[in-house]
Image (cartoon, rainbow, N blue to C red; front, top):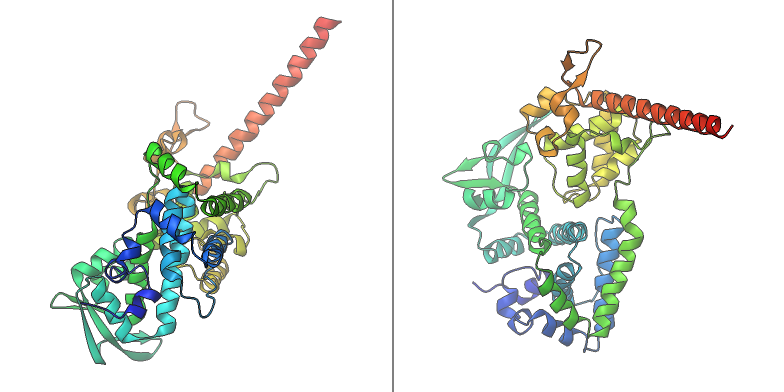
Length: 404
């Protein structure tokens, strides 16, 4: 099926790009770069790409869209080439998250069921469109019963394929209305699934084939404008990279970097967040409750989620404030194990695996709570610091005696 050309111009990640703009999309990357940077609007394209990278590095949640600009195809393809060339997982995740959020915002602003239907068809999704919308259930909001209706149903295989990385409970098939193999889905949720498709279109694994990457860069860097753009992006990243190394550090002791005291279950979630990976519901709850239990400021806890694909600052801030007010207690170790968030085996953490000593020298106690992990590690670090100070003091005293 052929979809409108203006839809491809607006959403260049659609498969029809290779059909309607094959003369551009089928070019080899080095050939594409040569062509792009020999045009009269080269500067405009470069500035647009710079803006996307700067927006991603500054944790912005949308991309400023200049009016009257029709460069989305060139920008999209150049963006994909640059993420490959930079070969940095953190950068790629940030670009993928921001670009896919922007795609969602465009679909939401357009608010066109016909465009949404055409997008689904172009993605080869088996969907059914209903006009007027069909009613399929009820939703209780306090004491009010609200009837649910939608324009779309999607075949359950396609739904599962798109939602595979969105592991929140409410997205599970069992929690959605299903009839004759088709899932009833509201427009905004369908857009969210498409957003995940767009995110995966940008994502690329860091290549281990360094020789091929070097060969490509040698060719690409012959185009001075491309090299300048590449270097500019790296220079911005160099200034920002330290900010992304867990910008929410907070010393509760004023002596020790508490991040070094975190148990592996917490480090794993922070690592995922840092890379821009999606977090499941239990991971989100646990990290919020855990950090709040350590008296982290609300705004710092909110910043943990800033790189996630579905981040909404106002909504997240409200939820974290609510959790702080309720004083929820973080999951204990047994709960973390039952919901597959315990990472002691993955990290081979000695304290988590073997426990710790007690007053009875022959007894080893098992950890029961991740907050206990911090207390024990902190105690051990303080004892080690005290031992090293005493040792240094003794060595100085011995040295003075020998010199007398």
